[in-house]
Amino acid sequence: MMPAMKQQNQLTLRTLLDGLVDTSVLAGIDDIPLGGITQDSRQAGANDVFIALQGATSHGLAFAQRAVDAGASAVLWDDADTDQRAMLDLLAEQAICLHVAGLQHKTGEIASRFFDHPSRDLYLIGVTGTDGKTSVSHYLAQCLNTESSPCGVLGTLGNGLVDSLAPTGLTTADAVQVQQSLADLLDRGAVAAAMEVSSHGLDQGRVDAVAFDTAVFTNLSRDHLDYHKTMDSYFEAKSKLFETAGLKSAVINLDDEFGRQLARKYRRRLTVYGFSTAEDIASIEQDADFIVHAKRITPGPRGFEVNVATPKGSGYFELGLLGEFNVSNSLAVLATLLLNNIAFEESLKRLQALQPVAGRMELVVADDMPTVIVDYAHTPQGITAACNAARLHFDGEFWCVFGCGGDRDREKRPLMAQAAERVADHIVVTSDNPRHEDPQSIIDQINEGFSKPDSVSAFVDRREAIAFALAQAASEDVVLIAGKGHESCQIIGDRYIGFDDRDVTRALFKQQAAGVGE
Image (cartoon, rainbow, N blue to C red):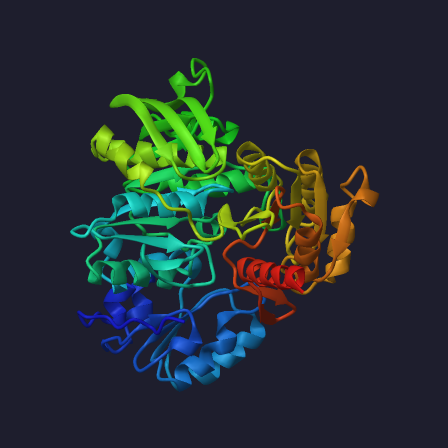
């Protein structure tokens, strides 16, 4: 948890809110200096501003008294119900309480002002899409990071310099944390950053007032419809990144239908670099100003050799990453490097040095054991891509272990089953993060998607499921453990229980090896 960051230039509440509220609201307010700013009452301190917004299950005002008790001198709020307004009468005797209409979409600007607009002093790349956001963001940060020009990354694995991340628990943190993290990167000497931008973050204004220079789109497939309801709404949320004021350029996957729609929609006002792995790009050449094209992709046991044509040169590079989707990810990175005038040969050299991202097609291997791949794939498209990737690089039979998260899109569950059944020889269904749902009910809903459910094994206990797959698979087989990737815990109810697919696999390997020797 980050403490509320303290502001250095003694900004006052009046100047912080100038132009965002009616001047009459500020007329009677003492022009006091501010200490910090936060959306988390647990981080509040002396003279801080606490921003109270409606959350998924409760309103921030429910925690405002805690913030005031900790020293907060001002509470900003919006959309409160009658009970909360009664609470405000009590708070008003202890702190300044201001109603700010439309606060959710003003918090980004408030936070940006507080931290002196940090994104304006960084070259900032926003990466959005259903799959690949984490990988592309980290690959970009790896390629842009140098000793003299450090690069930061913000996203699922944490915020910070690429080799020193602090976890946030969200793909896109709240608006204050985003601005705080950007300010922290500047303090640590960063000159650039790559940021994962989720559809929730865009829709809820968490990146409002972030000055992106380049926007990257990876792909769009079914996900988060429990929140967005329709694919059109999901797409519109993603599109907001490309409407950011001051955005100069876009890098878009032209192999994706939604990507082509984006490119056509925004090409008139942005420089658009498209990327593609299609054999024939004649039909998409008109959709972008420039295209980075993988003309030939040759798979090997641990990666690819990629022949590529770009507006700044043609050649090939060796990519030490698994999965053809990582070829697509690398093209997104290459296009971004080229539009920032990094020489073609130097760009290829940096791509060849890319290292896998934690929990993304991550190998766990041991002598005389099946090859295990741990991946974050948690959508039908993600399962298909990960399974096809394993097929491409390894011989032997293919096992897929997966589940679906609770309190999330239920209609996706049978579609995950169908995706796995199309490409796997053996399937083991289990729990992911069941949260507040019955894990057996989730498994039952997944099983509705199988055409041959009797051939599928199922275990509510995720460790038992992994152990079963490893015990049944031959040493030449491949076992994909999908859904949790880098995560180090399992969410059951309100409890976070330590569970890392990689560590569990290693422990089971040791047990199996010990059993063989007995």
